[in-house]
Amino acid sequence: MNGQHRKEIHPGAHVEIILKADQRTGKHTAGIVKDILTSSSFHSRGIKVRLDSGQIGRVQEVLLDEKA
Image (cartoon, rainbow, N blue to C red; front, side, top):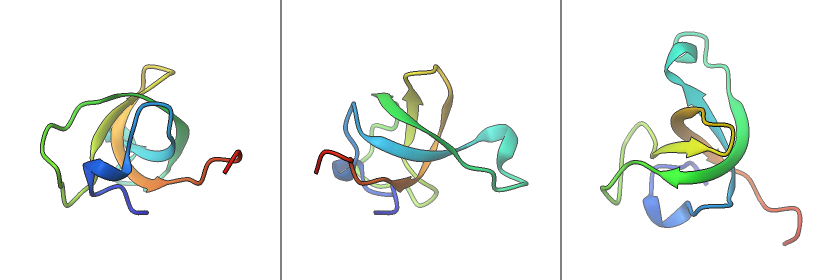
């Protein structure tokens, strides 16, 4: 899942985000969603989230949970 649809993302989900500072390099940061910051149901560059670590960025990929 590419992270453009809000319905694909929920608190506790494992995701890869791109931080604002890393947009030029394209470096991804993995983490667990704490809060969803984008209120719309779709965003072309990815839904903005806050990770448990406090980092904020746009979701590039929703990773499958290892439990599933």
